Image (cartoon, rainbow over all chains, first blue to last red; front, side):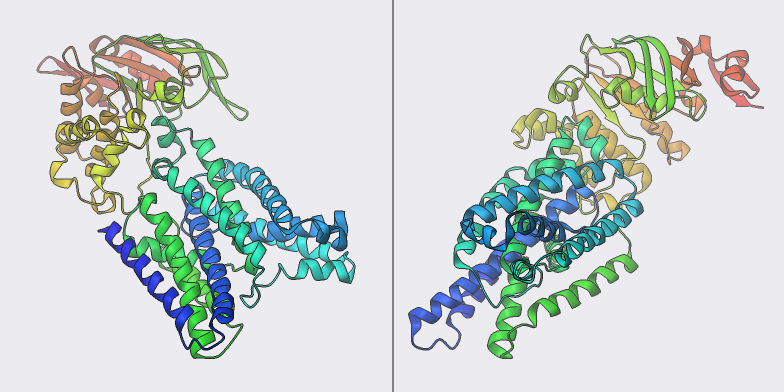
Length: 314
Length: 252
């Protein structure tokens, strides 16, 4: 049943992608298709990366309300980028090849996320209130630190960092898109490979360890994969706080399963569906360019409040 | 057999267990009794390989659970936690199937599926196999978690207060099932933390009484259940009566 629903979601995404590419297509076909394909690729990468990262993070945090963005993964990415600009200078950083720079930023984020959040999840596991409070405050702290450092930058250096700070789907760097797609595919495959272990990890640290799972290692790998996926998303379009929550909640609701072999791809598909459908409606039907991230944040924020007020975290 | 030598456990700055020397032979049911905070659950966790002792040693059938691989340990001893997490949307059969994880690591075989079905049957969960855990009563849920530990197919089962939230009928039913599973050549060796002294008196082959992080007494059931011993362990007076040859303990 859950498998069938996942396949339907996949088919819906395919159909939507076809519509996104072909709707009102006029000459010069090749040029317009190329532009649309790049944007579509970015939307799929960002949606899939965010949805998958959220399921991974929620499983190891044992909490359905927290997402990597809420606890500040994307702020950490912006902070690391700010630090790199401070160290190398805007010009120096621009001289580093795009792919190498992106790989460096991703590796830094993976390491920092494992250090920061690995310890946090272990020390407050089981205490849901403390976990949420610590996560949200950590997110605010990282955002504040990034903003403080940005004030110390030269205006030209600040411009380099600025493009990573606000979500926009208007511009897509094609070289970065290619690297992102590769990282996304690798992270998705690794996540699916560890899906059975994530099912066991969902039982809680002690029960999972009692079953012979090396729980701490699973948590560490999941956090690093989530960090890699968030770096893909943030580097491509900037931070979108509540997209992951929307995608993960809808995936759980629609597939009605705890199995990560279904949940992970479903959340990836739903994340992509939300963005592609949203962009299609705003750009093609309503002729608007930059409202999507705002609308995603609005509905995601409302869902967050609804989940908090309705039944609380697991 | 389970052997601990000078076992001590410290959580943060607090000493929980002090120099425990204990030998539990294979077979039957061994009950751990004692007041709250006596260290029963901590001892179970230390023995199962989940809480590294600060001093001393523990072996299970000669295996050091802290030197063995996590898989080897999970094939030797199964632990039921006091309050296991209830995962939403998880079905009973899936939960019990997790017990086979140490054997298949995510790729269940026909044998694993057979053992899962056998565990469901052993705890009368066949009819509930497709029910979500959230929809079960506390007693049914408890049985499902014990069935998961049983499906692990380990010679040792360590159960931390499995009678919690069970009414007398379900508690009796569960103890009878565990008693049955602990008999015979293929029977499991069960170590169980109990607050119900009469359940221990009725079903356990031996009782370990703990107090203040130490083993206070360790005897065959009937020998340990005297008013004097119980008063010293629980700091409250008890009367021990006899009913059909078994001791019945009444707090006065």
